[in-house]
Image (tube, rainbow, N blue to C red; front, side, top):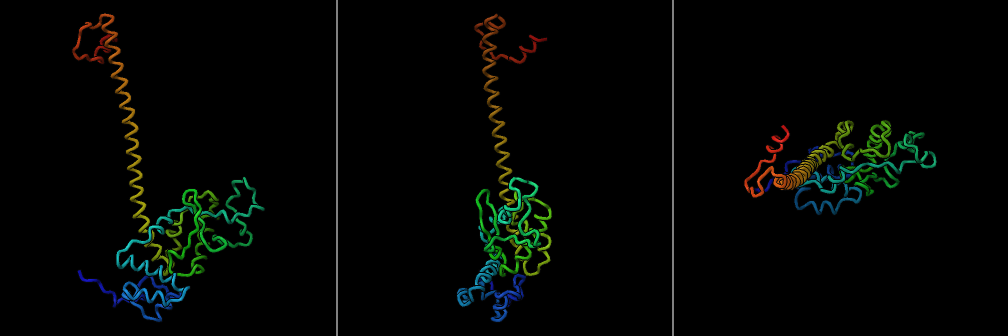
Length: 269
């Protein structure tokens, strides 16, 4: 099979190109095409890029390889989309009653009207079950953290704070990707959409497997109940036959199959 060539497709013509980033400016200056970033030249291009450009370039190439070469997006990234977001680090425990549930959604930035939902070193705090994790949006979007932080802060304010959902919320990272306002972001949403599709594909299969497992467990449970009832019924039949023989309702030497249910009906008519 002949290898597909992408020499005629410039990176600047793809929907994943962002002209406002250092990576975007580097790509435009060099005039890179898809073959440059998807072929053997990429290693040299990556090595020659500046450190602050390199991570953006890596994120971009990961997405390009997914779309144009059919490679899967990183499993870890998709898994993290299902993590529950946490905003515990925003609580000012000196100002908020610790056990006052209705005040748990409050944060110490409220009076300043500054909804900064990242921790002190710019990571998103999340939980995978009970394990605390620190996630970075730059693993998903080819841009600087400062380019996406205002949007995530706005998402926090509208979806968590304004709705007073509190610390025990069930908002996941994927909810930010599905946020309506992110759809208006020309240079960010193509990345978000690709991850939404990957997430839906992976977790739909997982959910189907979970439902199947639950149904099989339910079947097994009722099978056990049914088998237990059969055992009890069989044992009860033997006891009744012996009693019938002892009182003369049945011949003592009778070995033929006996319809216990019919006998019981006849005795109670």
